[in-house]
Amino acid sequence: MNIAKNKKLKLPAEKFFIIVVLIFGVLATFLTPPLSTGDEGYHLSYAYSQFSSTHPEVMSKPSLRVMENEAIGGVTGSTADISIKDTIFKKVDLGNDGIRFNLTSNGNSFVPINLMHLPASVGVLIARLIYPSIGVMDYGGRLANLLFFALCFYFIIKKSKQGKWLMVMLFTVPYLMKIASPSYDIFSFIVFAMFALNFLELTQIKSFKELSRKQRLYTLATILLLFFAKKNYVFSLFALVGLPMLYRPIVAYLKKMKSATKWVSSFIVTLLIVGTLVVFNEKFGLVHFTKVFFNNYLNFATMGTNARRMWMITPMNLPDFFNIIWILLFCWVAMGEFRQVYSKWTTWVSGMTYFINWVGIFAGIYIGQRTLSAFDELSGRYLQPFIIFFLPALQNLGAKYNIKLSEKTVASISKVSTITIMILYLLIVFYRGFILRVKPTGVV
Image (cartoon, rainbow, N blue to C red; front, side):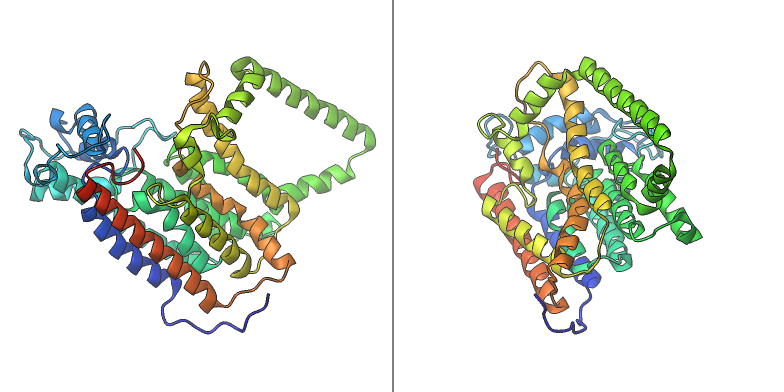
């Protein structure tokens, strides 16, 4: 589908992004009751402790977890008995807690240094010095993370050689609930986006010799930073197997091998695969592992509410049909905005990275709950960022069928879909949190 040549837009994608995200984020910060965006008590505790000398009990993880549970409705689902006003305006006794910088690990990254909470920690510290209440410190962490998110993704989108309006869609809607939150997911999202977009650029380079010194250093940096992010993002390293500069020399070498050497090599590889499967079977039990995986994520009769919502890209408090519409629009823009062709191997490996992440996270959960036939713990936020690895397949389809959209069309789709979802999200969060007094950010 060919559409007229693009006309230069007055507002570039990256500027639209930062304006909309900052406006939405500030509104979301104050329209979402404190401690109600998912694990917020946990994150606030870690963000506070990063600049704490004595680590007072009132800001400990157990204490804030209790408050968080009350803020989202606990067992009953109602927050009617919780005073949001007290949470915001009642100061907490921090004793004589001083300021000391700590980099202790929270166990959620491979590196025993907690950089993930650092942006939010700065905001919490400033808020603590201004007015030390739970609500105000939570707002401080939210606003600092928001600013960090908006600025970093502004430059990521600006630098990206991919379709910029597609990036606007990808880096807003899937992350809405965490944009205004002291969560470590913000740091992880940024690091992951840097790696994934760099991977997509590297797919167009045929050999290491073509890499500039700057590209090599940046690639190394994105890989190393993954180990400072949330553990599951390391699964994205599997995508590197799809880089032409890595697999083409191997393919060329295999073609030159003698037949006897090929047979021996094939036999050794087969033995390695069989050995891996045997070890995997002893550790997990392949049949039971597959059965539980199916029951949890592919069988609507057993997978439960949370697992069904694992497939939602849009916020969980919105009706499912918004999710369907957004995905269709995302695919349309992905196929029509930016023309780039990838090799079949790159496309398959890139798509498989999504499933490697999915199965890998499930395996981690399965180890501790293998006796159960079904459990709901793998939510959509673990998988949403990885949809970026489907871009090679979508862009190949766009190239194959000559789908081309004007920048004006793409910008309109991106703007309307993003702003619509944001407004609906804010309205529902405010209505549920302050009017109905139930969990605002999802279904209880």
